[in-house]
Length: 252
Image (cartoon, rainbow, N blue to C red; front, side):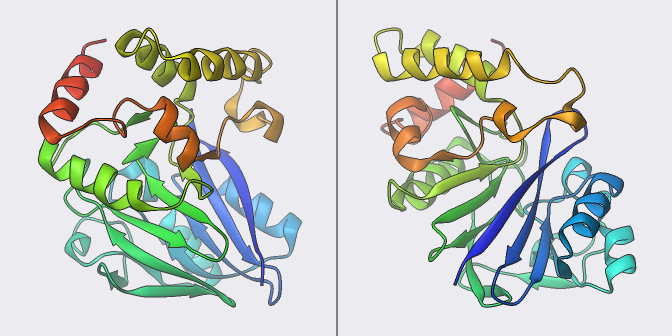
């Protein structure tokens, strides 16, 4: 079995994902704030969209879901607690549930803190994690609806427990700015400096319009192994330390 993952640039710096089971052609769209770039990729690929997946309720991750659901006759999935605030949601998920895209299966992790109903989709066979705005390359999301304790559990104890070679597909192209902050927090960390220079080279060729970005201009996916070496939030020893780093990042 094989899961084909296509990164679709949406809004100013969002990643929407088209996940296709190569064996069956069945597909799912994950976190779509605008419909046309997604429709264009679906039509170009010939994928058969059967599900719309959502990590959390923020409009820049789900605003297009009702229109996409109508166009493709697909149910919209999100955390059960977001039933009344997630655009077009039809099906609720909880930690321990699983969901299939063709022959490919993902398990659900409940990772609240950025929002109270945030979830991640973990495709173990494909070694792919879709973690929305909880774990970013080099960073983590703002703690809008939770606490540092909740973020530590979500980030370090749950996502951080997965293997090094799992690929991290997050919600935004924030990698360069996150690594600039990471280098400020850990100035002696050579791994951070090396990755920051690599990312700067990638982003120096980036399209002026994010919608025109090519795969060569994208820094996602990262891997959990890279994040353990370069992400100060994933490296935090406890929730107090994570909270202090996040407070610094909020005003950096």
